[in-house]
Picture 1 (cartoon, one colour):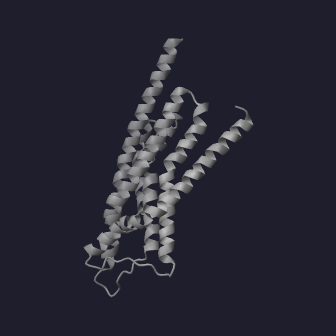
Picture 2: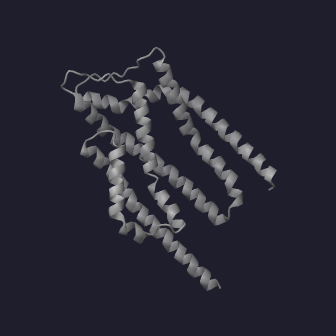
Picture 3: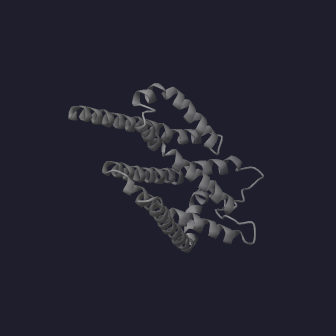
Length: 250
């Protein structure tokens, strides 16, 4: 394909991706009212666990409309993302060899799966722990919580997206291993430094000061680090096998 043919193809893929985002946002807005109940559940459970009213509030006349639109947009982007990645794949795939296309497809699928696992871990494990501690910390005093749903939504997005990114650690290790930047031996030998970095990251990312919540953050990061070691070992083994096969072919 010529340079202008590439531009035409890129425009086609961009239009398709933007159309998917637009359709996804329409669907997201249609589902937003039901999603509000789903998003509110961790905070309501934390309030009930501390014997408080589980009602959440908005503090401006247009606060609920703003919440409705923002949540609908987030849902729309999430729903459209597989199609957007598919358009990226259609643009890139013709320039790849068959084995590169298989590797790229596996890479995209793995990245999406790990990101979804991070979000699920955040929603079902991390948020209940964090929110229960935060609400319990102030219970029994003269101050009662009045939870603004819009601010609560911002907290949820930061925590869930942050954990989704953290769960991409094996993918990052895979890329570094492919380029020979890290090896399994290097990762195991430098585990103590990785542990220090994980502790610092957990201390920064954890929204509460208690050690239990920080340990909950650290546990999947440590597990993902060792998953990365296994991934690096598999990559190194395949590279050695390919070199050996190439040498025999000569």
